[in-house]
Structure formats: structure tokens, C-alpha cells
Amino acid sequence: MFTAHRLSLAGVLSLALAHSAFAAECAPDTGHGAQVFANECSVCHAVTKGGATMMGPNLAGVYGRKSGSLAGFSYSQAMRDKNVEWQAETIAQFITQPQAFVPGTYMPYMGLASADDRQAVACFLKEQQ
Image (cartoon, rainbow, N blue to C red; front, top):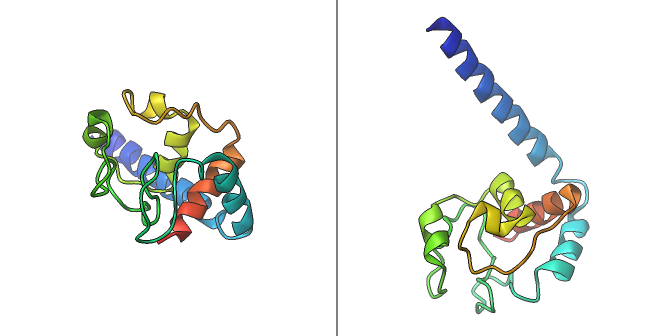
């Protein structure tokens, strides 16, 4: 029992350190995320608060929102059922390969290969509250 507790504590500390490292890396270059978003995402997604949806949902305020929950957008059942909260880590995981993260999603995007670009987009979306 002591070992399991120690392992659980180690796991929690590892996650906390990873989260703080990810958050700390958001600050330096906010322009990079905007540029990657413009090149890779803006064809289907807007980030204008209160703006209309396009082919994909409006991503203004996506950070902290549950998957498949934006009113007025027709999500796949898979996206609604995923029930994930969009945080930097989950956004980065999703845009790595959307069909692998949410099998059955309507999003046809093949994924963003660069970890730096994924992190930049996640940080950019965090700013779009």
C-alpha cells in the first residue's frame, strides 16, 4: 500500500511538472502560434469571440470547454462522447492526429507533425478567451 501511494504521488508530481513546463513555454513567442493557426487551421476554424462557425467550430474560448459542446455546431457523436476538457495538453494530442485521438471525428485534418507547432497552436488557443 505504501508503494502504491508513493507511485501515485510520483505520478501526480510528474504530471504537475509537465503541466507547468508546458505552461511556462507558452509565454515567449505568441506570434508563432498565430502564424501556425493561420496556415493550418483558419481555413476551417475562426477564433473570433461570438463569431460564426465555419466548416469547423469557432475556437474562441475553446480552452477549458468540453469537447463537442459549442452550441450551434453539429459535432460527430464521437466528439460529443469523448467528453474531454480542452487544455494545452489535450489540444496538442488532438491536433497530432485527430482521428486517432477521437476515432469517428468529422475533422478531416491529417495532423500537425511538429511538436513545437502543436504547442504553439495550443498556447495561441489558450489566449483566445
